[in-house]
Image (cartoon, rainbow over all chains, first blue to last red; front, top):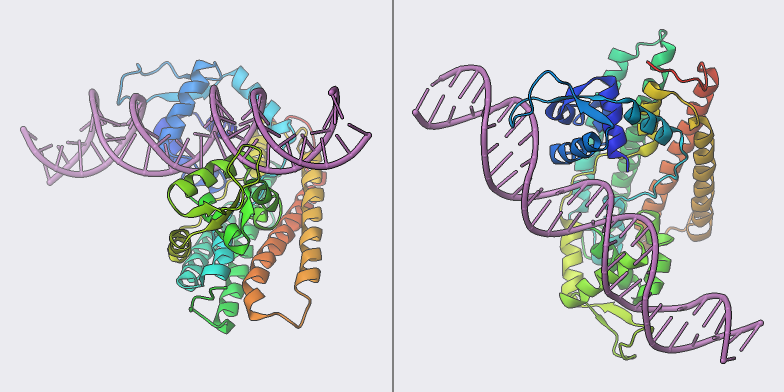
Length: 185
Length: 185
DNA sequence: TATACCATGTAACAAGTTACATGATTTA
DNA sequence: TAAATCATGTAACTTGTTACATGGTATA
């Protein structure tokens, strides 16, 4: 039950059409809550039906016509309620770790390469975050309103730092391990 | 498409019944791939139907009777194929970060408490992992077969270390921020 | 006037969640 | 023998994914 709230947040930051939201879910909010355009349109329909948002009255709702939405008071209230409510952290779900565990049984063939590929991807993501930090949060002048945004960005940076560190360590280990053969226990 | 492979891995490590698997998915494998008993029974049914696993012939398949499964060659082959195949890392999805972003718009009421609660939970998880490390991987004598298991555990430790660090930092920030009021932009 | 792209959708499916049902075994 | 618990399931629902459809607008 997070996608509607992600959309409400995005729309409060800036009223948008479905496609504009889709674009924003490819970066920005999408860095920690991604969604496809199909999900977004389905959810926009629901939110409009329940009275949380409405289409701005400018354009008529024809197919292929841009429709821009804004948040109604009910939507804002629901978002505030959800934000304040306590939630448990979701348990980790990571395929790469699962594959390593499987590799201990069926052999490590192919995984080393993929570790290197992941390391590269995480390095790129880290670089992207650091660029954003330099651009949007130059040292010394954090406006208090930006503190929360910066905090979120730092989570991203720290997380990618963890991954690059761990993957580097993992690759070192791999060079020391008996290697590719099927360690069929 | 990871649950079947998680189950195959668990069954290769040790043939088990549905409930035994459910227990193991609450710890061990469950630390990075959790599943409920409903998911597990459904998946066991599929895996058996497609010939990847079979019930050990000891007990007859009555309801409420323990049924223990083992992996067939087809299942092992499929697991090896999946393990070797390259996969993209899944984009991050985190509710807490989303809530912080929402809080920048609708106010930070209630979030501070939950940050503290999460910090506590992550500290406990970290302590649990470190206990396992001391027990199962005492320094100095890593058998090469255990290296992969240890690597996975270390990912868990590093990840929880990241969370506790970031949450501590976040709480410090929160004490400096204008506080609970609705920063309604 | 084709062709590409913009914008909004539909449909079918897969995976995960929540609530409940039922038979067998232990134990009070 | 009643209650609790073990063990295996069913059903309904929500969320996320993949593939495709359709109308409008720009441009070669």
